[in-house]
Length: 422
Image 1 (cartoon, rainbow, N blue to C red):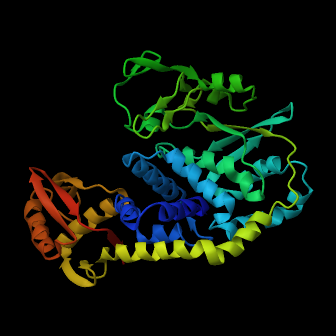
Image 2 (tube, rainbow, N blue to C red; image 1 turned 30 degrees about the horizontal axis):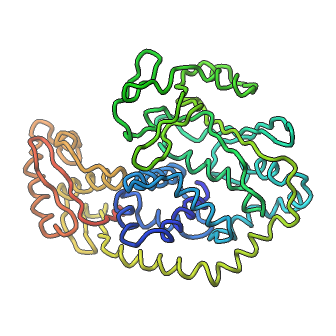
């Protein structure tokens, strides 16, 4: 479980920048935007599962792309709004600094201390550590190593948000943002980073070709470490094959950079370079946070709260579906719908849909389930599915099943669905 502070900022930025109608479109695009997740992204001091946290931010990013908006511009606007004193999580951020208050009043470099303490304060950075570099001509160059992604559970756009979080962190301490935050290496592969945004993609030998133009080539992660001048403990990492990007690949619609020139994709870790003016001292690093707490109670928070209430009212068309294990039945909005085998079919379908958003299903998946087809020689699934289709006609304003092809069917949701078992 990780802090919801970044997700909460994104939630507030959506309410501040878009109409309720627009935000509802986003929330209905992914069943993970259920009531519990929305509450976890709203209430101060709440926490949320890391994978859900990444998935929700990824969905927001893709939604912005679908509207021809640059996610990077949204993230910059979000942090600039909050670090200017309109931060709706000021209490939480201030509390996270309380054990460190004496350090920040005594430090001779508030931004260096801010960077060093970030992995300890920010649970959503995963297994992060800071590597201190040298100071030359009044400029420091440090690195942060993040191992956020689990194997085969990558989030396409998560590092966009983390980069913004790192860059603007000193602003909460009445200081300036870091002058340069550059992601040198991504755990994402180049395919994941592109996420279907471009066409004409090919990997020819060790060359990455997009629209008949070479934009990158294959190297090892060791080349990245050598270029950075770092010493790396895990020698096995150095042999990991990566794609080095020779020039920016830009989304032609939003203008957002999809692949960054000079970055390595498919690396064993995320490696972030942070360059900034050294020796910055703030007389009162916590004055902005304390002032914003007062302002939020009056000028800032009330209009955001009204937008939140308007959103919740608009989301009242959510249907509540419950599977009861005790009598093997399903109810819709507290009204009994079906029981026994038809209920189990709908239960399995809703489990998958609310978890992944999947709508297409194969008959054979259900025929193999002994809870649904107890006799594998005579599964009789089609007739059982027909009974489910018939039952769903009574709740067709919420969802239905379409048997649009032989051997398979489609689940058609018509509103947000809240499903649980008890």
